[in-house]
Image (spheres, one colour):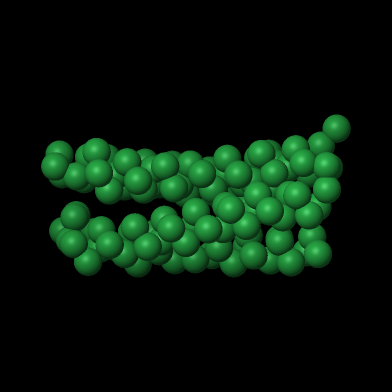
Length: 118
């Protein structure tokens, strides 16, 4: 029996939504970027809900917190990659601000959840 049902956690739900948004974002990349930065973005995004789900199966809050911390690291990695895409103008006329804000909100949610487990 899971102590935390990941499917009911707001951080997991929001991170799946973010992953979907990242997928749609990377679909707009020019062909020359499809397998480089695009692939890294998608892997970092998928890592966030995956670590939340994996951690929820752990027996202790300390173990769960470890996986949440990895998820948080992936969220910061993802933010950095979005900033790189923005600085390199991978998609001209794209509003990167909304995507970055979405990631930052999720970072705060995950950090608060980690603190609640202590």
